[in-house]
Structure formats: C-alpha cells, structure tokens
Image (cartoon, rainbow, N blue to C red; front, side, top):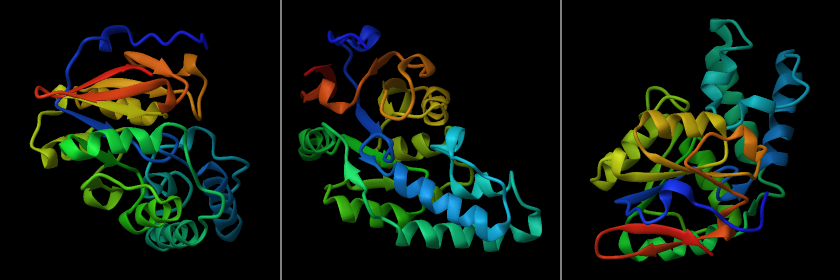
Length: 223
C-alpha cells in the first residue's frame, strides 16, 4: 500500500457515529481464533485446515456449514467455551486505543462484533481496551454478519441512522454487513489484502487515521 493515505469519498464527510468491528479491527485475536477452531474441529471430527474466509462470521453460522442440525447446539456451546478460555496472545492493534479514546467523550461510537457477549468481554478484558458503552454481540441479533442487522442495531442503540454512520471493518463479511446497513465503510488491511476489501477507503490499520469530533459529528482524517 502507498504511504500516502487517501480517504476517497470519506474526505470531508461528517458522520453521526463510528461503528467498529472488534476482531481484526481493534484487536488481533487471529492466533487464538485459529487455535480454538482447529481444536474444535478435531473434537467434532471436522476437516478444517485453516480458518480462511470464515473470519468475521458468528460461530453459530459457521457450525451449520459443517455439522448436522442435531449437533448444532452442542457444537456452538463448545466453540464458545474453547474461545472464551483461550485468550493467549490477543493484543490491541495499532491506533485502536487512540481511536476509541478520541470518540469516547462524545458517545458517538459503538462496537458490533461477531463474538457472543462473554467472549467479547473476555477478549476486551485481556487487552485492557476501554470499549464504548454500546456493544452489540452475536447473541443480541437473529442473524449475524454479513447480514446488516448487527450494524443496524448498533446505530439504533446510539439513536442514529446507520446510513449516517461510518463502519470500520477488516473482513469482507463485515464490510458487506456495513454496506447493506447503508453505512459508509473504512476498511483496514489487517487480516486481508487491500485489494480484497470493498469499501470507500482502505488503510493499513487505525494508526493511519484520526477521528475528529465536532458539534455536528465525526470526521475521519489522515493521521
């Protein structure tokens, strides 16, 4: 990626709020995620050599692709248990703490994650990040990403329209969720190549940008 940050059509826009994904956007949990799923796959006799394109999709939706319906409940409960217990090596991604801190006083931010609540809190807790007051987790919606419901709910809980928000994401599934919610999107090339991400702008990570709060809302500018 070029050193000069271009924010394309996001330049000069003012957003009612910024809606963040969590894994791959604010924190790097990839090693823990892959360890957990490979352990789960071994326990359930599933052939899984890597996690690949499943990043950003709730566990309950992934499990249905591999196992018969009568095993879904047990299998989902087990992967949630494994992941919640394995938080080793999870770290804050560059720029994430600063981004959350810049937006915190305004109340113009939220997290919408594909983790269930207990897992999200475990991962946030081990990193020391201070999350926004609004935290939307997979167990709060009927359908997770790439469906738009997580971001629609996050916006609604902030009292704003999703079409006036900026979604910050690292995964194609999450970017599709933000798009279908009507939001503008800033993609981070933290887990996928930049050319695999469809968004109004793509940057390396949150250290490349700053969020500026005004009386009208939030603007994103190059760092």
